[in-house]
Image (cartoon, rainbow, N blue to C red; front, side):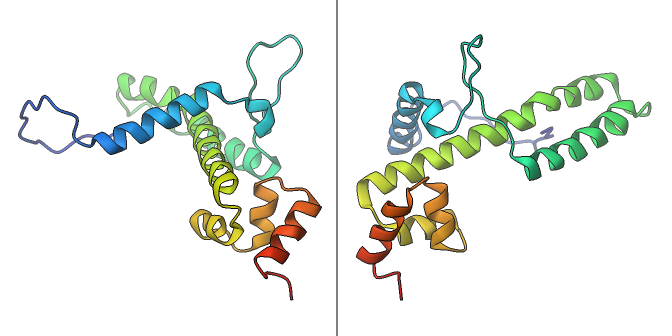
Length: 157
């Protein structure tokens, strides 16, 4: 993500612009630092110290398509400045990292909200999912948990 910003007037301000937002970010960072990523679907081989996430099949295909275009077109563009080519080369790992991080944050918030509210309709709306079935799958609810929740919220006919 390369951005050339518009010129702006700079002014030094010695205060946090939004203390409530800062606290939410700190809480989220703390939760992530204490999170067991294996419980959220991460994988870890016995010889590895750090768990990792992998794309599913469809996402992997999109990544391969994107990465191929990056390697064959953008990074081979002889008309571009070398510093830009070098910058774009960092995207190979930046983009998958951003995608996995965003997904992990999104799922963490959904699970946290589920634990507090047990309201699948609310979570479905917040995630923008098409169905309750997709939401229960995303939350990794067991079949019994999903059926009990559906009955409690009168989601079954």
